[in-house]
Length: 188
Image 1 (cartoon, rainbow, N blue to C red):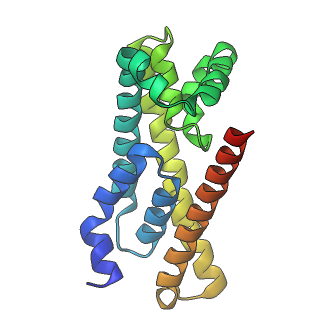
Image 2: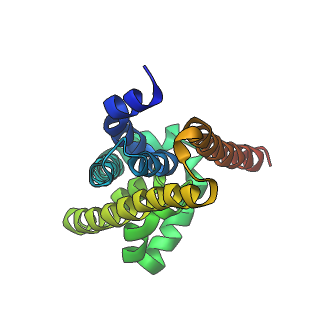
């Protein structure tokens, strides 16, 4: 199996699963794959929208129904949860709409919103809107990234494996820095 057939066969499922939890790097790579013609951008955005929406709804529900059980098991969430509570006190609607763009807060934010008095209807409406904005923005960003690469280096097909690996490594590097920073804060 070559890269093209792997992406064509498993790409949309990988997007859904990847965006269920975090997913920026997955979605950027998917947008790039759409630019290369391996995936259809509309379906990339739809898979990312559905993955993001389902994941956030699940974490909202867990926060609403099981926060007393789950929160003690995740002590690292305490600091982030406090920050989210403070943000929610001042900027409730913008937080619900745009938390996906705050790296490192993707899981804890819908959980904390579930713990808050925000109504289910309000969360669903704003979550659908926010997930759509995020999926379109990041998916189209990945597509445009592919277009920009083509302008600078010509035919991407010769370099596509390298480009996919570099983007994935960049995502891994960002995650590693975030993980290291979080671990360092925990030790202090």
